Length: 229
Image (cartoon, rainbow, N blue to C red):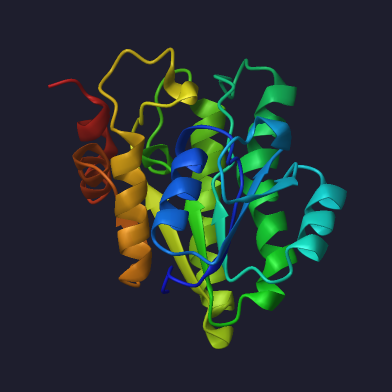
């Protein structure tokens, strides 16, 4: 996938990683970038086309696909983190996580895939696709579903030569991690790695050492990963 000359659409473009994706796509020569958000008035980046989009609303997704039918690169970045656990957490919050990260991502792919022959999809996933931590149950489950969704649609879209890349990362310094007291990565660095990987044709971009450690742990006994050293 060559970004120079591409026509991209970024979900959740008003802040965090989405804002960096939008900026760096323009810097790399994208011919057009649709910067989407539930409140597009919050997108203040020059040189973009703003578009109202709620990925959890099928009518909003369909409307966006009609307007942006020329997209060649779809960046599924929009996300939430409710902090809900799975056993005693609020079921409505758990459903919001799945509606956003799984059903919302799938809805975007289904809406835009017909026009993405020879183009690409980049799904923003998480190291939490591969492990769980107290307070992240709903998020981790939804991101795990989105990870295997990414694997499945890659196979389903192979015949039309649509590249499907997953970005996996730990915590980045964005609004979503404002209450997190651990180390965080520079979101600009994460996005650069994602776009470099996309242009290199990678199926997965492992954006940081922590995520690489989590992936490597999957080959062993899970008790080893969850037991403090």
